[in-house]
Length: 152
Image (cartoon, rainbow, N blue to C red; front, side, top):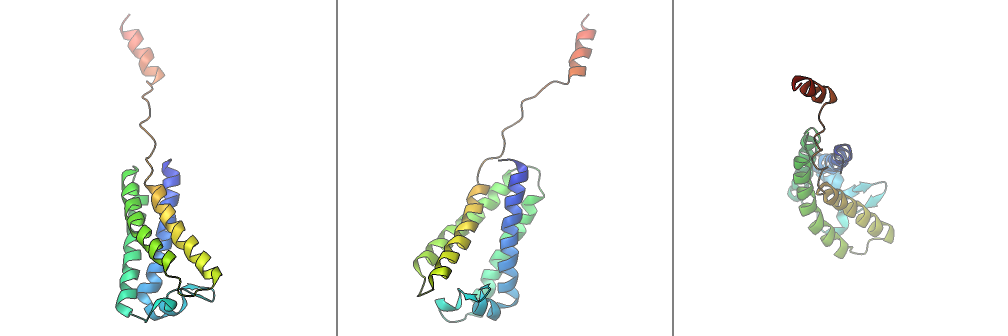
């Protein structure tokens, strides 16, 4: 995977983390009542409001976003792959839970839930892919020419 594509994935995960994280950490009651927005409600249908839990989820998403941003500014693929591990380890059980606990949600919300949570999991998995292999060394033509001249 190219570094440009990896950086795009990292910025995408950062955007998810900032969106969910800021909303949940700063406005936990609004997050509980109205996430994901646009008139849909996914959190309140799953049990009573718990400010501590909602703020902790926000902090977790912000931490993942911070790791994604930091990795986006590195040169090699390794930090992006580590961030991919974190998003995948978080995303898989998160998706499994929500895929089995729809609590009477309308079909549109079930589909949105699967797409949203599955999408962030896929981003994490894609970040796990190896970067490009080492580039073969190609000698500079002028250096090769100079070496030939020195041997004459």
